[in-house]
Length: 181
Image 1 (cartoon, helix red, strand yellow):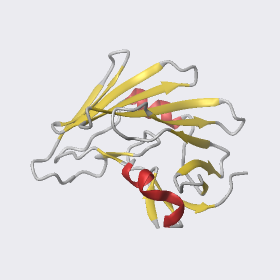
Image 2 (spheres, rainbow, N blue to C red):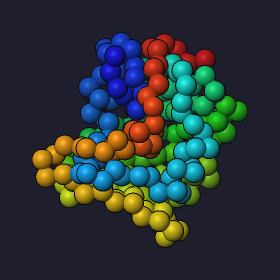
Image 3 (tube, rainbow, N blue to C red):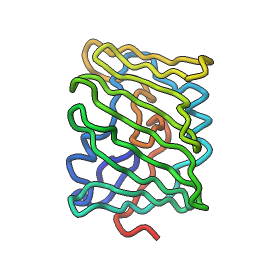
Image 4 (cartoon, one colour):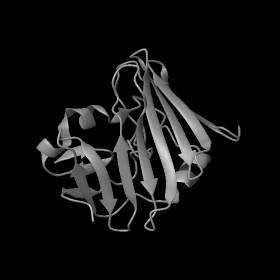
């Protein structure tokens, strides 16, 4: 089993190196990075939890996750150089939009994040560089930061983000490789 997109996925060959490299480690120090309320509330509207199916592309990358609740997460793009962002679009059981999460790499050194609501409006932005991570609500209500540890290790339970834009302190779920319904 391999951790990909914040969930445990069976069949390593279906995941591919790109998905594994797409995991977004925030390398924090002794203080956990907590998601600000605007992001917590956004991702909570379409909880990506429970059993799921992982569908892959011909190249072996994960293209879609389908949860038993009916929530779906579709992945486009890949994190490589200064290219277009890697995007996950999460939809509700009725196929209506829920939120999206974009990750881009700037100058090959710093990750930039954007969380958008169902209407495509930016809710929060973030960054992760060598000095640490920062996520801020666009309405100015809250900013969360985390400084990088000097030894490069994460000591907190919530120091990572998944490709779904969630904190990794959420319990991982086990996905089975297959075709989404």
